[in-house]
Amino acid sequence: MKLAGKMKLAGIALMSILIMMLAACGSKEEPNDTKAKSGEKPATKDEKIVVYTAGPKGLAEKIQAEFEKKSGIKVEQFQGTTGKILSRLEAEKNNPKADVVIVASWPSAVGMKKDGWTQAYADAKNADKLVPEWVDNEKHFFGYSASALGIVYNTDLVKTAPKDWKDLTGADWKDQVNFPDPTLSGSAVDFISGYLNDKGDEGWKLFEEIKKNGAYLAGANAEALDPVVTGSKKAVIAGVDYMAYSAKEKGEAIDIIYPESGTVINPRPAMILKDAPNVDGAKQFIDFLLSDEGQKLTTDAKLIPGRADIQADGRPGKDDIPLLKYDWKWMMEHGDEVTEKFMKIYK
Image 1 (cartoon, rainbow, N blue to C red):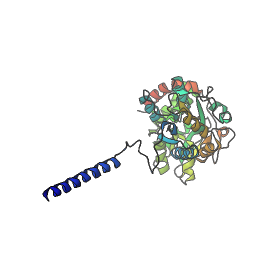
Image 2: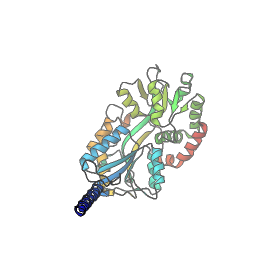
Image 3: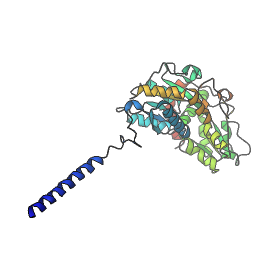
Image 4: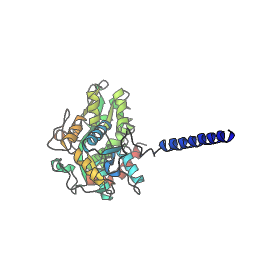
């Protein structure tokens, strides 16, 4: 009886060990970045692309969702300002992760190509329908949409709208103007360098006088605009127009003017990185941006469509906006020195 009892206990112990081993096998965790969700298998390299984009956030998310639905390719997306994207790319240059990059500054794309970061996509669908000057001559990047810069102002606080940039040096605007930080905003760099490209060194007088009138350097574009929306500031100089139109459509007391002396239109270039892990998927993404569906998403977001055969929706189009005389190559070559000098004025 004692022997039988011991054998019975040994059997129970053995069974317990087997159950524990099976449970351990069944509960083994996979790494977080490869674990399947909802019974789906993890995306392989060819089923996924990585996109770095300078927004707009709502548009970027809609493009991501529609592209995934249409292509079956998963999009991992990082959203940030042009400055943050360029910093991230620089940090990852020895271990590239991004396939597609979209920035809010044409000179930045020119510089990336010059530095060998991009590759050509000669057969991009609908590229021939883009505004001609919004396509790189070697098809390295494509201006799939654009925004323009103006004076965005609060209509509750401002009864007589300004007409030109120099108006913001007047007493009515004392301590009431925000300026986007060019170290964070690619479009701000484009405006400053574009203005100087047109006006020469005399152009510095505008930025110095606006600073003397109490202009405040207020972060990137959204941070510069928010106090104008809430009414703690009257205006933002070099405000991004699609943000103004979107806020106005939501009922905010906001409007925008394009100064009589001219402004800068920023095509938003999309490009495939030279070391993109998934070039085929990246090409499909570029094709989607230039497709009818992609362009419709841009017009819904109050951007100027990149394609010349599509009309802007609820806002002025490219040909309705007075422009400064500027050269993208000059702006790219002088962007850093212009930004450095500007920041010394606004320190």
